[in-house]
Image 1 (cartoon, rainbow, N blue to C red):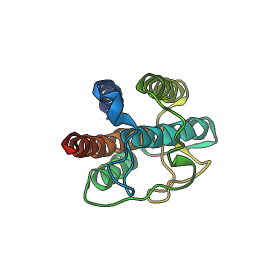
Image 2 (spheres, rainbow, N blue to C red):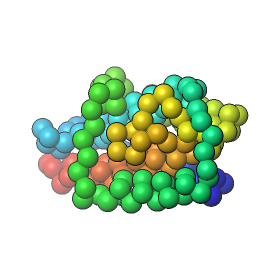
Image 3 (tube, one colour):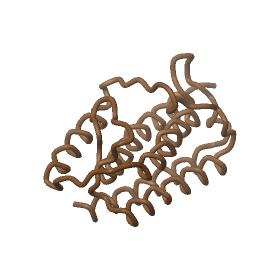
Image 4 (cartoon, helix red, strand yellow):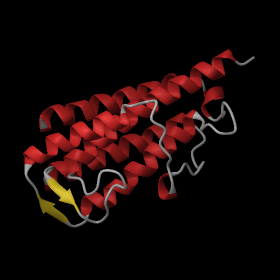
Amino acid sequence: METTLLSDFKKNTTTLLDFIHQVDATHLLVNPSREEWSIMDCCEHILQLEQALIRLFRGSVEKVNEAASEQTIAIIKNRLLAIDNKMTAFGIILPQRIYKNKEDISQAIQETRTMLHRIGTNNGWNKKCMMYAHPSFGHLTRLEWIAFCTYHVERHLYQMKSILTKLSRCP
C-alpha cells in the first residue's frame, strides 16, 4: 500500500504541475464568478495546506497499526472524490493571493511536495501526526496525509478544469 500511495503522490504532482504549465497565463488569475476561486487560488490553497503539513510532519508522532490506515485512506478518498459534496476552506489554508505566475507557484508546490516526501521517508510513514487533527478525519499518519494530498489535488484538478472550461467560453 505504501509504495502505491507514494507512486500515486508522485504522479499526482506531475499531473498538477503539467496542468499549471498548460494553463494560459491570462486565465490563471481570473475568477469565473465572485463566489468561485481562480485557478491560482486553487493552487495557493493546495500549497498553503501542504506547507502546513511540513510542520505537522516534523512534530510529535505516535506509532499506529497499518491495517487501520487502509480503512482511513478509503474514507478520505471517498469523501474528497465526492465532487458534488461542497467543502469550505478556512484559516491558514485560504489562498493568500501571493503568487502571480505559474513558474513561482509550480516551483513552490514541487519544493513542498519534495520536502513532505523526504520527511516521511526519513522519519517513517506509519506514524500518526499529533500536533493537530484534521477537522473531519482526526489525527492522521504521514502516509494518510500523503493520500489526503493526492485526493485533495485530484479534487481541485477537477475544479480547475471546470474553471478553465468556464473561462474558455467567455468572450
